[in-house]
Length: 373
Image (cartoon, rainbow, N blue to C red; front, top):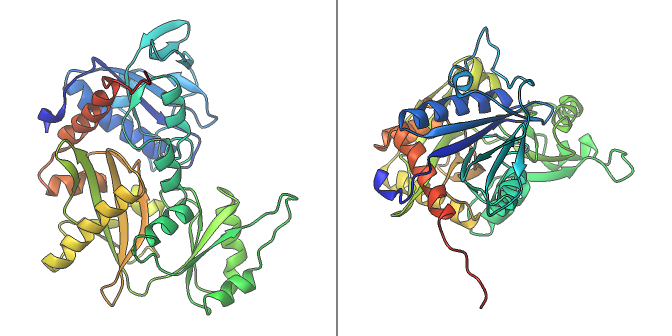
C-alpha cells in the first residue's frame, strides 16, 4: 500500500470532536489515527472541536490517551489555545493562538453533523488544504439519507419501503400526522430516523402507532427532516468497506453484523458502550452473492461521487434480496471499528489504511489545477 503514496507531508492535521452526538466516537477515532501517524514518523497538529463548536489545539499526547471511562466517552476540553483557519491557499495552515502552523494535509474525522456533511470540507477547500475523504458535494449527498436513497434507486438498487417527512412548515407548525404515516405502511413496524445523522442517534424502532409521536420527537432533536422506513423482516445486516487506491476502487470482504438478543437493533449503546454486536467477516454467503454485494457497494460509492473511503451498509431480507440502507463517508475509524476490521480480513492492516488515505490526500495537494490560458 505504501507504494501509492507519492508525497509524504511532514505534518498532518487531525480535526475531531464536533457538535453532534458522535463527538466521543470521533475522539476515539482521532486517538487511533494519531497513534498510527506518529508511529509512522509524521508530525501531528491535533485540533479538537468542542461540543459548542469552538476549535482548540489539543496536545497529541492527550489525544493518544483518550479512552472510555466508566461508560463515558472522551470529549474535547474547551480550554487551551484557540485555532482558526489561515485563509490563504498559497500558505495553507492554521493559526494556533497568534502562531501560524503550516499544514497541507488534514484527516477530518468528525462523524456526522458538521464534519461528514460537507461543512468542514468546504472550509478546508477555501483554505487550500487537502483532506482525506469525499468532497463537499458527495459528503452532503451521502449525509442526507433521502437524497442518497433516491440516487441509489436511480441505478436499480433496491432501497426498501420508505417516505420522507418534513415535520415543520416555515411557520414552525407541525405538518405530519402520525396516523397517516402509520396507515401508509399498513400498520407494520417502522424505523424513524433523522434524515442527516449517524451512529443511530435519534433513531427509534416503533411497533405501534401510539409510539410514533414520541419517536418523531426523538428524531426531531437532530433534524426537522425525517425518514420513515418500513422494517425489513428477519434482515441480515451486511457491510462493505470501500477503499480507493491507485489500482482503483476496492471492496473489502463482506461483513455481517449480528446484534445480541438484548438489543432491539444496532443502536448507539450496542455499537460503542456494551459490546452489543459481533462482526462476522467474511460473512457466510454464497460466493456469487458475496461478489454481488461487493460490486453493488462499489457502484453505490461511484454513483454518489465518493472519494477515498466509505462504508456501505445493506440489509439482506428473508428472500435474499439486497436492500441498500445507507453509506457512511466518515465511518468509525479505530483499529476495532467495523471498517478497519473488514479490511483486516481483506489483508490490509490499520496503519496501512491510514497511510493510504493520507497518501491519497497528499497526491491531491501536489496536483496542479487546470488553468484557463
